[in-house]
Image (cartoon, rainbow, N blue to C red; front, side, top):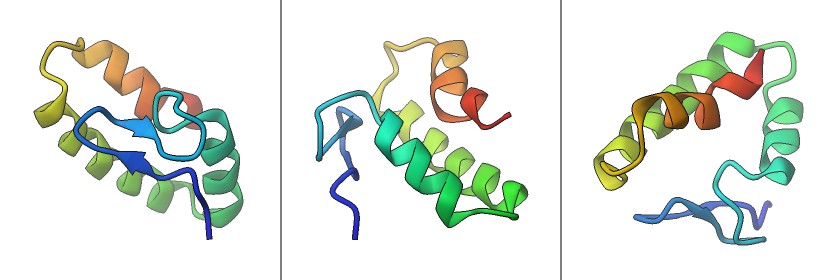
Length: 72
């Protein structure tokens, strides 16, 4: 079980305090969703939708890059 889960509404990592998904959680997610990139993208898109409600002051482009841009 990971300690790198998001703490909302700030969307910081509960394990290391970095913006979520932090580098550690990204690596964990890549391993968890190995061979299922569409499923990973759908999971992260759902998290992005939640984050946009909590972080209206953060630009949509930044949030998109933070949640989905690294998956390519």
